[in-house]
Image (tube, rainbow, N blue to C red; front, side, top):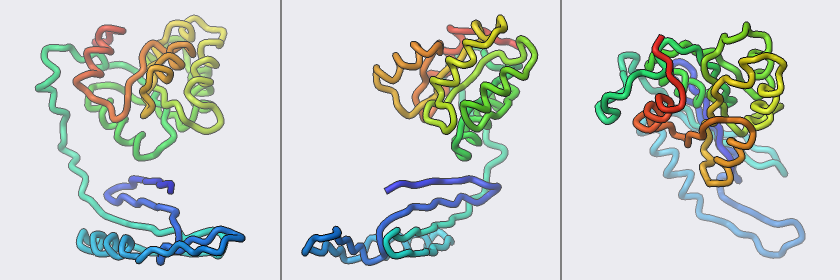
Amino acid sequence: MTSTARLRSSTTTATWPVSTSKSRKKRAGARTVYEGSGTGLSIVKKLVEAMGGTISWTSAKGQGTTFCVTLSFAIDTACRIDRSDVGNVPDPLRGANVLLVEDNEMNMEIAECLLVDLGARVTRAWDGQEAVDIFAASSTGAFDIVFMDIMMPRKNGLEATRAIRALDRPDAKTVPICAMSANAFHDDVQASLDAGMIAHFAKPIDVAKLLPAIAKLVGFHG
């Protein structure tokens, strides 16, 4: 089962492609039919309605059923990052021009909010190829740091990093590029470093770990 989530204004819409509402599954050529009670969907419906949301569905034979859950939340625009557990680490991103590369809309919005609250100016790129194009079209030294997702269409984060490093301009070799990925095993970290990144941060981003690491690797103070 896969899921996608998108955040627009004050509404979060999540869509899960799953099996039919009766959870009936039959493998072609098999005699056995595996059928669930369907209570899972019933529970979801009650929870969604209790939260003031709606649930709808579409179904096609041979393709499955898509259930769409829509919930509305008020966004706290006055929210600020709690730095009490960061200590006296300076703001290494204050005044920095950041290229943020992320293909997921919700992740992009969360990361951008985090970086802006830390004082950074953010330019968005929605996949690796767009990141390369934006960097190549920018003036030398336009970006102080790049935060790069790994799993993306067209070019993934590793490919995009290699392409940026290969550009014929001095800042392409020196601009700090940091991975931001849900994959944080040793091999994942090493792959990022081998591609030319200087650090690999695991999602969800922990500010208490991010700021000291960035301050140690690079220094931006506006």
